[in-house]
Every structure is written in structure tokens, then in C-alpha cells.
Length: 453
Image (cartoon, rainbow, N blue to C red; front, side):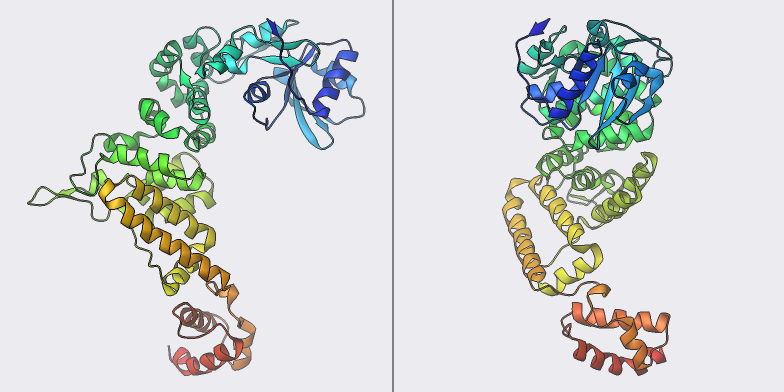
């Protein structure tokens, strides 16, 4: 079905379509770029499908770089003015033995056949400026209804490619769509198929999901799916905290905190992990009140294991571990305290820690929220004041360097390092200004002490 829709295509996309048409082939913008354009969003990528075979595509662009990025599946990548565009031949897919990739594909001449192999109706639309929107499966109506629905039989779609299970709920989290009942049933019935998907692919989809505006609701509704690759959430569910500070169980508290967090992947993931250790640390006193001594350290340990399993990059893993470990540690709204935290985490890390604490606070019992949010507001204000003063909080910011201390007679190695750290400690604590002459004077005073150590 062709619909009267006028989408704004980038000039490069229009030119690519025109050149394929001049060569005698059909060509359309397809998939996510069409979906996002209909939603009024700016697409990140523009994919193109065509009746031309890969070699025919190359022939249409003799003077343009074209890479064989997925030749087995009919995909080449054309680089136009430095920007890549994937161009894929109309195809149908053969058997999926690994629940991820078809064993073979068959090239076809029909756009409808190509759209019929795709995952969800909202991704199974194509567009050409002259012929309009090709929407054979009701994708435009599903967009209007804010609905995620499989193309064809959900059970078949999910068995073909199990990553679609996570993609469905990711779209729901990002766009605020509901998953229509038959598709939702298919997700629940086939959830264990996620075990066949690589950790790297799961992490990519899950990161997009948890950064979605509607992540809280989706995590709540599809916790069973999430448990397949994140079984650590199961002990949190229904775990009564038995403390006046909390009005939710551990899982519900975590969900509310995720929903309250800024959509930064590091912050959201740290919030997801921050209380995972609570069930292991629970102690109930004689009055029936619950305590979770040491839960931050245990949560960090669990988070580290999860992130290793899901193949997080080292930088993200280190930062998230630090945030989980420190999420319950007070931050004083004094310059000395803020400088110390900046020394430990840097500016970005401290801002993320404050964001984690704020999200955590918003998920507490209402009576305790205003005072704690005000305290964090004061920390933010102090942070801005410290940064405006261009205060020193790292060794690199010291007004003296290692060479200056070497000239005073310090020995390279541990002695020099200890002296620089002592000077930095003095600046962080406010005992010494970050002034070259003052620091050199302090260094001379430290020399006997340092040499004696």
C-alpha cells in the first residue's frame, strides 16, 4: 500500500535514490529512518533497499567508494561525501539456525517481500519521494496507536532472531509505546532464546533501553525477560526493606530510582546496580527494623561480575563500580570535601555521583526526600563555586611540578611522588594555597620528613 506522505530526505539520500532509478532499479529509504521521520525525529542513519544486486549498485556509482560490508546478505556501504549509507538488495531470508542470522538469503524483485521479512511493522515501511510511503503491514497506523507489533507471526519472528525480543522492549522504553498483546505473549514465551545472543549485542540493546524515557515501566513489565541475562535482579523483587526510609521493596525502589535518574547510561546503570547487594546484607534488629550494613560494597561486587559477563568496556565498568561503591557515602557541602571528591572522581564523575544520589533519594519514602534533596543542592552549589575558582584537585593542577622538586633535591621515585601527594593534600585540605612560592616553601619544610620516611 502506498500512502500520501511527504518526508524530508537529505540531499545525499535523494541523489542515491535517483542514481539507482536512472540505472533502472527501484530504490527506497527503509526501516528506522522512515519510522523516525514519521515520528518527527531526526534519523541517525539512512538505510536504502533496492532491486539492484550488489554489483549493479556498484555499477551505478563508479566514482564513489562502495565497501562489501555484508555481501552475503546483499548489503554494501556507499560512502557519499564522507557519510556511510547501507544499501541492501530486496531479499527473503532462509532458515535461522542460530536464532540470530539466516543461513542464506534469496534476492527478490518485490519490495513487499523484502518488507515482510522485517521485525516490527513500524520498521517495515519504505519511502520514495515520487511514489510515497510503502506500508504493507500497517506500520503507520501502529505509529499512531503507539504500538509495537511483529510483522506476521511473533513466534516465528522471535525464533528467527532472538535479539528482536530485546529490541521490542527497547522501542517501548524509548518511544513510550505499548507492545500489542500477541507480540507481548511471544516475548514472554520465547524469552529464554536470549541465551543464544552474544553479550555484546545484549549490552547494546539494553543500554539503549535503560536510557529510554520510559525505562522504568518497561523494566517493571518485562522483568522476566531482563532476568534471562540479568538474574541478579530476582532477589530484589518483593524484598521488604523494613525501614521507615523506604516505602518500596528493593526492586520497586530501584525502578523508581531509574525513572528519576537523568538519561545518562553511566548514571542509569549505576542506579540499576546500586542496591543489588541489599538482599545479601539484610539484618533485622529486635524491633523488626531492617539494616543493610556494607550493602554498597556487595552491590559493587555484584555489579563488577555483571559488567564482566556483559562485556562492558573498562572505562564504563570502572566508573560504574565507583558510583555504586560511593552511592551511600555522604558528600559534605564544604569546599574541602568537594575538592577531595573531585580528586577521587574528577568533575564528570562527581556530577554523576550526585545524579545517582539524587535519583536514589527521589525513590525513598516521601517524608525524607526534601531534606536530602536540599543537601544535594547545596553540594551542587559548592561544586560550582569550587570549579569557578579553578581550584586544584588533581596533581596536574598543582602550581609546582616534579621538576621543581627535583631541583630542591628530592629523589626521583617514591620520595618525589610522596612529596607531590603531600603538597596536593595540603591544597585539598586548605592548609596551603595553590601558589608556586607557597608550595616550594612547604616542600622545603617537607624534605626532612619525606627523606626520613
